[in-house]
Every structure is written in C-alpha cells, then in structure tokens.
Length: 300
Image (cartoon, rainbow, N blue to C red; front, side, top):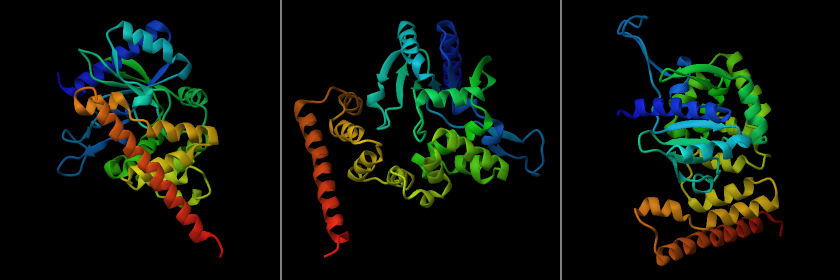
C-alpha cells in the first residue's frame, strides 16, 4: 500500500474509533491541510488549467491531537483494536507531547496530547482549537480538522523546531499570507501562549529576549546540534525550579525504548552505563560553562 494511502486510511480509522468511544480529536498536518497551504504547480503557461494542481504535503505518519482528558479512553480503545505503543510520551521528543502507535495494517500515528510551542494548559488549548474546527473528508470519511488560521499556526510552530527543513511551510503559512491572515495567526498565538515559538519561525525572536523560553526556541530554530546546549536550553525554559529539575533528570537518564529502536535489540548494561556517563558529561560541561560566563560578566 502506498504510504500516502495508508496515512489517509489511518486518519479515517482513528476517527471512526474515536467516535465509537466518544473521544474528541483533531486531525492535523498531512492530508488535513487547506489547499492554500500546499505547494502549487502551475500549468506551463502560468495559467489555471488542467495541469495546475496542489502537491500533497509529505508525511511519514498520521497526526492527531486528542482532548487531553480523553486520552486514556482513546489509548485503551486503540490497544483493544490492534494498535501497540511504539514510543510512549516520555520516549518521544523532550516535549513529551506525543506517543507513536503502530498497527499491522495501517500507517504509524502520532497521538498528540499537546503541541510544542503552545504554552497554555493543553485542555484549554484544545478547547480553543476545537471551537474553530471544520470538517474535511479523509479517505472518504468526515474528519474534524483545524481551521485555516490554526493550520497556519501549527505548521509554523512545527517549522520553528526545524526551520531549515520546513521553509516551504513558513513561506506558504506566513510569508505569502496577507497582512490580515498574519494578524489572525498572531492573535491566535497570543491566546495559546505561542508567541515565542511563532516568532522563532517568522524571524522576530529578538522581540522576546526577556522570556524564559527564548533560549530554547533560539536553539531549536537555528538548528543547534550540541546536545549539551539543547539540554541546558530545555532546562532553563521550564517555568518552575521543580519542573526544571524534573526536565534535567529526564533528559539525563538514557531512554531504553529509544535505544532499543536504534540498536535493533535491547541495550546492554554497558551501553546504558556509557549513555548515562555521556549525559552526566553534558551536565558537568554546561555547569562549568555557566560558571565561567557568570564570572566574566561579574564586576571585579
């Protein structure tokens, strides 16, 4: 089965299952996108005609955003219908925003309980996005998807984490948008606490230097590859000391499930120990670097 067909069938099957168990979810990215946000190939003459078409956005899996309070119901239902958890929320990105599920006959699906860059409570964020939902058929099945403004914002927040790979999304969602469309995206970002991540995608991050999450989005949007610097940026972005400590520990402890996926087998005790030592090295190196920077800034 072609991957794009499998992804569409996955969206449709997840929607049917969600309806059966009373779960609210929104289908995001991939085949859910409005034609205005897709690459367009014009006819040779540059006119509308038989050869003018939109190009589907490339996806490797399906993506859904579920109402957080409904998440346990959906996961139980998916497990009961042949889905297994490939990566749990703690195994995914450092944002712990999505779990990856797989099925023997369908494409992978990322089940999101939140979206990176959105700062308000996930339940409140879902309510806001749900209020502007529209319906679109995917594989012939009606599915609730984000409104156009929210689609622009989600693509931009996604691009902020890997902007070099998503320049087309930034252009279609922001650069080529009208001034009123941009203002609508900015207003929605303010409502969702996503101003900093949006600024990272649109080139205005300097306006938010005073915000605690500035360093994280500066690192992500610039393609920072130093795992040590990314570790420190993520820790500093947390709003409370308690959450910062949890994040620091969470990122230091080796992820067994991820290592199993990379190695193709469970990691040995020696491999786990080496991974742990490497991560402790990040902490020590960044701590030393921070002390050095503070000494240089302090008056003599």
